[in-house]
Image (tube, rainbow, N blue to C red; front, top):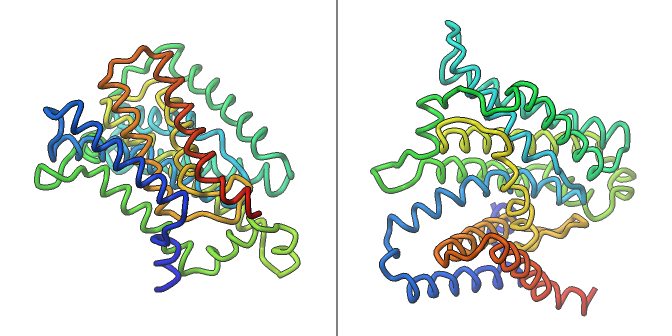
Length: 322
């Protein structure tokens, strides 16, 4: 139990900084736009954060190994399109459960392909997953014929994305809590979690210690593919249908949130609480920029600069004391 608490709730320097950033943004929103501040407003932001948070849950495990998965955007897009396509096919077997199950299986298949390339073929994860992302992009465009497919999300997909429990708590947030809870338990209670951190610190030492390094890499990318598929299903439910490139805007926030939350890109260090706070911080930042009605170019500049600044501040001590 102590391991679970350590993995989930140990507060380190980057987490404190991200928490202060969230607090500062919340105060700024309250001062600048007091009419928007309400329980419903923050629940809406939590709903939006859940989409990024689920993808970040997959990105975190891969980053803990010192790897990266750049196929997440089109894994999410392809999974969403497949789920909507299956549900709208009119087949007797096509229903809510089947549509979502097929999408999740697709996410696992793509994760398995990424793991095969990295663990078996020893390909650099950045290059391999980028190639897989390009392949998925092409296949999706062929499937859609260059247009958004004329398919609709199922009622269950819509409920998971936009539904509310007691008309207050977003169902999407509960899905995020479920996904995050599984990850926290795996990292804190199972040997697999210890192996992930060990491999992130030194893959060679982990291998010499008898850890099944290939199996660990397969788990990480399978988990990332599954989280991407879940995110794609929710994004489709939120929009009412899947559309091309709907996963692209999720790549930067999902990876940045993990890194801003204290997970090292070189692997071996990171807490899930940091990822959660990082997701909330970037979600609120994006919303503030939208409320300000800043031009898209300026929003991108501010968004990117803020991420870099948070990273520099949070890593200052680590650079001074390696």
